[in-house]
Length: 363
Image (cartoon, rainbow, N blue to C red; front, side):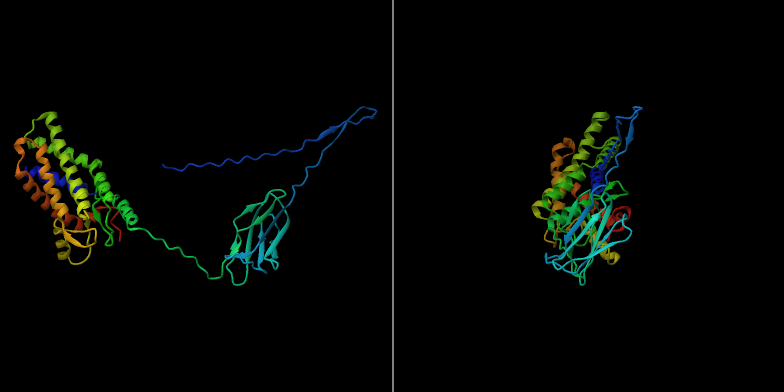
């Protein structure tokens, strides 16, 4: 029984770890050339006909105009406006009038243009490239200048819950050797507390991770070989041992890492120290089964962890074989779990971070 509980604890300690946007653009261009029409020549003695090609008309030119203003929509007279295009031999330049207005006429259609506006005391503004259509009168309305040296700042405020969600997203990527879940470790010293919903989400994600099923299956095989727990041999006995191994892990995770931490407002994660003397780090790791951080940020007795182990042992008396039940199952399992947590704390503090790729170089 000692070995079974110890094996279950090792399984539980182990788990604490397109859309391709396909776009396409279809450009359909069509040309409708004018076809020469034959004009019959009546009165020709030979009755022959002559033909004349009608010349294709030039596309109508375009026009670009606008008004130069500042961010407050006040006009800026005397601003220099430069129009650039690969179709132009040289840049076209005009000066905005007293009303801040400018105008470029008789511009070739179907080519790309770019506009630059500058004025003394203001930062230069450059438009995005645009193409004029035949006969188009384009009025630019977004040419607003900012004072030189003016900067825009945006203050972003996030709630504690939003930060916690982002922290959990990062922590759920933590896997020892790239595949063993290591979700219950906070490497940031300023980690915010988890909401009750997040505690349940992480516990459920951890308990349903494929590695957990693999661990439970392996433990069941070991117990089957050693004939531990009073089940029969064969496939039926293996299935019973597998059910017990996985149920122990699931119950312990849900009670010790979600239900009790939510009720008692305690954080179920191990808070990595990472600095200080080896002695202080070791004491921090060894005390983790007994001391935890509350949701208020203060250190307090770890009622959730101890209570979770005791509750798991008590509930296991429901589904263990009758001959394996009793108070000893509860207290012996709790002692083994506590010892396992102490070892796990030491591993978290000194070993596992180096084996967790997503956390190895994180500050």
